[in-house]
Image 1 (tube, rainbow, N blue to C red):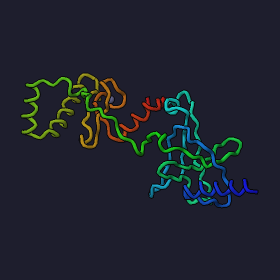
Image 2: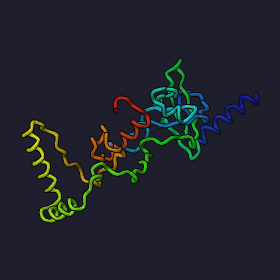
Image 3: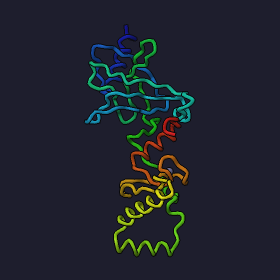
Image 4: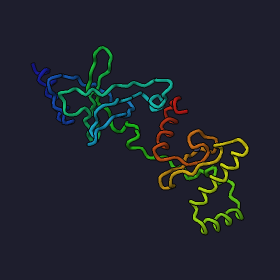
Length: 227
Ligand SMILES: [Zn+2]
């Protein structure tokens, strides 16, 4: 039967293309090339995907609209006979998934050109046009005064003392804890990107890079818990 011969020959060609070797369990191929998709994977120390999920939708808008939930998600099926579960080529990615629907498990094939950035290949947006709230009220004579003092005694020391003095003043008025705290070195932070009234940076204008990633992610996904 020629059709059957051709069928298995073609299947083997596809498996070879991805470097996939079937072992013990036969998992059918599913064509997901039309979908926009993103991989939310868990990795081991060697960068191998060891779990997580693939999310996909018909449009980018649907994929990003966390609240409407108009996207699909499949858990990565870490089938124990296979050496790995995500097979990446330059053009396509084949992912072994468990749909948790009617026992269906697939080798889902996605188009790399429709992959959306995740945290792992994340590039922060350019917020350089923003002015941080703490830089808004610069006054030249104040600036010179602080510069002189800072060069005398050290800028870090000024910050420490300013916080202490401020705290003492507030304590007298019964408003403990209202003073600003100095934070990490600027090289370890990034602009928040807000315009002042902000729960993420409390108006300081600066976040650690990790927190900034979380902020941008939550804004993209509109996760209520982070608001
Ligand atoms: Zn902010």
